[in-house]
Length: 406
Image (cartoon, rainbow, N blue to C red; front, side):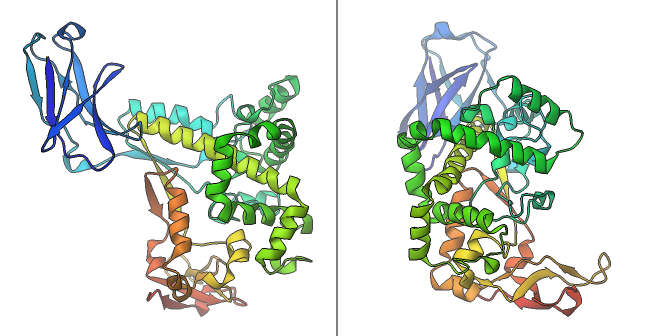
């Protein structure tokens, strides 16, 4: 028997027919028509089936409602279907910070691998999106003050605390299980202790497995594709810990980023720099695996793009010209805040960004697109005009609107 449907795919997309757990590849005929022949013996009247879009081996879209085989299967039967879409394609979802996903398997804080269970729940309840709060690395001082997710030290790096330790080679021995249960029993996330203990285990895993990991082809590919931000970020982290502060203006050396000098520093501190590359590689693998799993379930991950970039971040250290470092972003006075708001982030130097065609933004959005199918843009008005306050001033009252003319 033959199934056929008209669906106009984009370049690289293909259709499959899914019956239960089995997916049957369809063949393109012409003018958007796709067909597949199945044995009549493999189906029975009343079976449910639906069509899915596949791209690069991943299921990226499926029908809203399944079809029901209303006739007895036979070799001569031809089924002509129409795609069952969501009316206007409106989607429901859940917004949540990763750190609040607590399971018995994690280590006192939600981790990327906890998202598998959330995806299953979202799929079972008919939700299409899971929106996450920002997941970038926010480590500045190794204290609880680093816990604010909108003050990242990198717009590209993921937060090491979301790493699932056993998946990077940490043995679940008696000591590990005792610490895991102790941290999981805490009614709230003990941010400082969780990160300190995790880093201790990460260093052990690095010492034990890095030689083998660094020989992997996918590790070399990861380094090559991310070198532009990864090496400066790793050097920034090492210098931050060496100087006891993320405020690079107070560093004894390399307070101003110079590519040649940083390359020499990296060569002299290879082990420490490689540790941070090792961590980012594993975070990348774990989050990307979740994304693939979610897509296969018809659930999509939505990221959160903060309007601000920290003035003590690797981004500001490497390219201060892209930011107005003598200004601060915020909000004007209103009924909720009579004094206005001062977020302390430098504002964007849009004129300078325009000179290279907004390359930094393209790299940033490109990196986020590796994990997310959609974004929430934080304070989107800030991309048109921002409330700008001079650096020495604390109050938002002394700000002014600065339009983003480029």
